Image 1 (cartoon, one colour):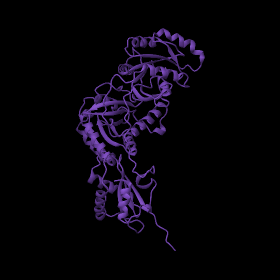
Image 2: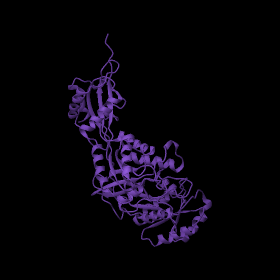
Image 3: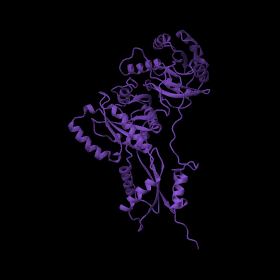
Image 4: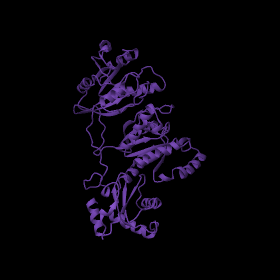
Amino acid sequence: MSDQDDVAYMTRLGIDPGDFVADDGPLGDRDGDGDLDEASDDEVLAAAPVLAVVGRPNVGKSTLVNRMLGRREAVVQDIPGVTRDRVAYDALWNGRRFTLVDTGGWEPDATGLQAAVAEQAALAIQTADAVLLVVDASVGATATDEAVARVLRRSDRPVLLTATKVDDDRLMGDVAALWRLGLGEPYPVSGLHGRGSGDLLDAILEALPESPRDTFGTGTGGPRRVALVGKPNVGKSSLLNRVSGETRSVVHDVAGTTVDPVDSLVEMDGEVWRFVDTAGLRKRVNFASGMEYYASLRTRAAIEAAEVAVVLIDASEPIAEQDQRVITMVEESGRALVLAFNKWDLVDEDRRIALKRELERDLVRVQWAERVNVSALTGRAVAKIAPALRTALASWDMRIPTGRLNGWLSDIVAATPPPVRSGKQPKILFATQAKTRPPTFVLFTSGFLEAGYRRFLERRLREEFGFTGTPIRLSVRVREKRARKR
């Protein structure tokens, strides 16, 4: 039902829409175009060729990526090893779109965590259409740079060489010395100041094919966007690797391994999903600093860009304050919600009993959320994630017809009227669903409704219509008192 239909419906009931006061425009029409504001689907773009940006740690890859993107996307800090995963960004230059894949520092003989980071860089090269090797001009070609160059010379991908941190002409002699790497002309750039970035981008477009080598069909409407969020070390990257069937994110015992959001197309239960593995939220954004601060901002942005969030909770440990904070962040953003209790293989009978009590005490406000018990390590019940996502998204997209909504509301109010306030009992005159994603309802009343009664209405809404897995918004519009005519 459109805004115009709602207004006509109210008029038949003898209600003047102009009598009501609210702060978000008529019937949810925030932009004043006369229609309900709906969350529109993203434009589906044609598949874009992929450029992998590689190099040893701390040569300025992420700084250069931000410069080429024209915005600060990649997390940057003046310490080596900040970027660890393959992180893809949409880029645009001279009217052509392509995908930039930022990688962690590549060291061929690395061990431990750095070896996993290097493996991600190698995988990025295998899946890219062209490769950009970044060398620090102020240091020159090191033994690691030469080892990487030998690998790239054997690759069947086009390879470009760029020298970073060339802020003035004093380093041009050092740039010329990079010809010995055997990768062709080195392009001098300054990721910090932008010097030479335009020439480099022109060369990149010449090297990239018009279309990527490998395409992943996403359907006509595009894949649904899923954000994997949670506190550090709950298994987000392990779960992404499990559902994707490949080592897509670096996994290590060190908490906080993931820094940048890692974007992956995953086929699960016959449908393609776009999963985003995010940095673990360790503390409030206001109190974070350095790369943790920027990682927190990107995690929040990933939630805002998603349609549904999977909040991972370590089932083997008590539910922490940070778990509740992450859930609140998702709830406030208005996204559909699935709670995934990971590491279920470590849960014994005593822990299950304790967890049940914690759910009743700490997560009572999100009883509507979909829940699954999984183990990213063993693969237990991972197949249940896709049905839970579909249920949550169906509720997120649900719309209740105005006639049915008002008929239900009349029965509820007749059985349980609003509480008296200041000696008067407010009346609910009319209700409409102003928007979906999340479902948002507007109640037109003759007086203020207490918060407790709003919660009662939300609970009864869920009992009648479901809305499993999505938050609900209730907005009240109170009729203004008209001045008496003299």
